[in-house]
Amino acid sequence: MTFNLNQNRMFSDLKLALKSDYSSLTSQANGGRSILFVYPPQEEELFIAEAKRKYSDHLFFIDAREVFVSFIDTYGWNDFKELYSELKDELFKNDSFDNPTFFSMLIDKIKEAYEMGKVPALIHSGALYGTNFGNINLMEHPLIIKSKIPFVAFYPATTENENIKFLNAQIASKYRCIIIK
Image (tube, rainbow, N blue to C red; front, top):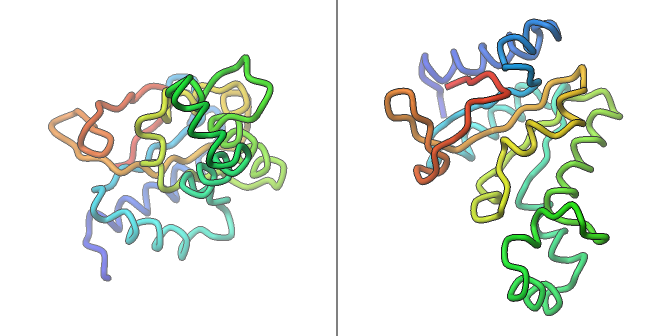
């Protein structure tokens, strides 16, 4: 697919944001180190494919769907179902758990990207919908806040005026990040 002028501008803006210096990103992102790359949910695969084509050398793509499946696999399906019926969405992010949570597994992937000197880029973030955390929880995590390398969240959302609605359902936080839309 050929991207239109606005879509090409978005990728140019992402390239500029990734090249911006640490202090500039921090001041624009309210003390954060994150970039929220917003696109229509129905065009997600096109935007992700283009991002991989353009930035595979610099970005470490973290597929939230794959991490979610790995999270379930750590428990096994039957144990996961039992735990979920007992704990509901607390199972996905809970600092008091000894076992990994979906959130902690995403943080581990982000840490892996940082250790490689790459920019972590969360894709298929729709997998976060219905958990008790969102991109803002990732963006405010100390690992990301303290990093000299930004974090990118590819974000399927619609926009109405200045409101960004994750999956056209949930108002998004614009805090701790710069927004490319």
